[in-house]
Image (cartoon, one colour):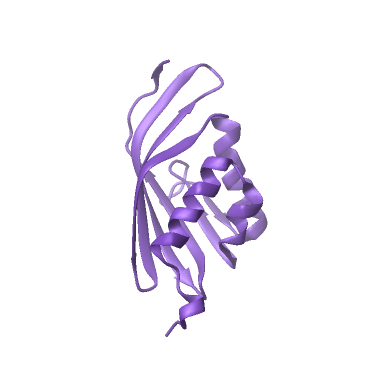
Length: 131
């Protein structure tokens, strides 16, 4: 059972989302457990593309801004229930080819020791469009 200082809250997830919108990689990693995992919205595996371990997760997170330099996550709703939680939001970003992505998405989290151990991302498969 987690003690109060080891509990992830809705406010924790809101702060994590704020770090995404600031494009603050160091802040994002401060929320992640040492043995963290990130499963991206797309990729060759059953869970999309998986990044396992702090260095790989950091690289995976950085790909969001390499793909869409103006990436943002807005209109967020956060839920925490014990050692699980989710954040639902709208992802917006412009790719290097000028096409725009806007789609609702959900991150499903597993928490351990007051940190995010697993971030599993899902996004609606909406085709990019001209900005």
